[in-house]
Amino acid sequence: GWLKERVEEMRRVLKPAGSIFLHCDWHANAYIRADILDKIFGMNNFRNEIIWKRATSGSSKSVANRLGTDHDMIYFYSKSEDYNFIPVWTEYPAKEVDKRFKKSDEHGKYKDAELATYSQDTLEKLKRENRLIVNSSGKYRYKIYLDEIKGVLADDIWNDIPPVNSQAKERVGYPTQKPEALLERIIKMASNEGDTVLDPFMGGGTAIAVADKLNRRWLGIDQSAMAVKVTELRLQKQQDLFSAPYAVQLHKYDYDTLRYKDAFAFEAWIVRQFGGTPNAKQRGDMGLDGKAA
Image (cartoon, rainbow, N blue to C red; front, side, top):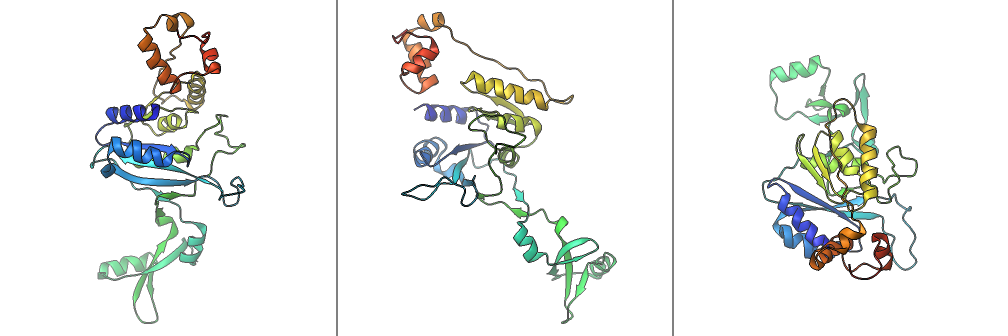
């Protein structure tokens, strides 16, 4: 249906080194992966099924006859074998810090590691920096400080990014709003400054706002005029002297424009807007009288 058509168009405009990230929940994830993404991008270009644990343990809605659901899926596909990928580092979990970095000195917490190969110059340098350790067996070891470590390489389970709560500063009130940290990780992982980010399901504008902050070029699309206005207001709040200019284009349809459209063009418009024949409410929203225009 409409999703398949949009994914086909997304692949068409994607650069060879580009990637797509499609977020969904459990309702249609199997269909989206097997019948849309695998077929359009090819199974050989599947990279990851990222699990975003968006709720803390015990906070998911209780369900009487099955397990609670507290995660969503983000499918990561590339257009080719030669694609942009920048490894993601996350902070050491507090438990890991306590477990691995048990000792500390005037420079901070550290762990010690074996000095397998070394030269006299290396030993002298470590001595000067007070990083050399000689254990009871006479083996050389050295200090690795916590602040020298990037962290740990992220895997495909992301449980360190909470959803946007009711008190969050970034909250704009859009029902499906995603946290900026989630989009920041994705954009940094798959693009460089100056690259272009396209979000054809713009919603509350998180991807666009984050792409703008990260000095990416961007393009956002949404059939909802409200989504466009919410995103525009969000961008206005974060603009400064160095922000690149942007344009907003709203396509409005009045009764006469739709009434006198070619029948097939009107049918195509209906499919794009609603994914099928409109119901009574949708016809009312369009200003139609319930009859084919």
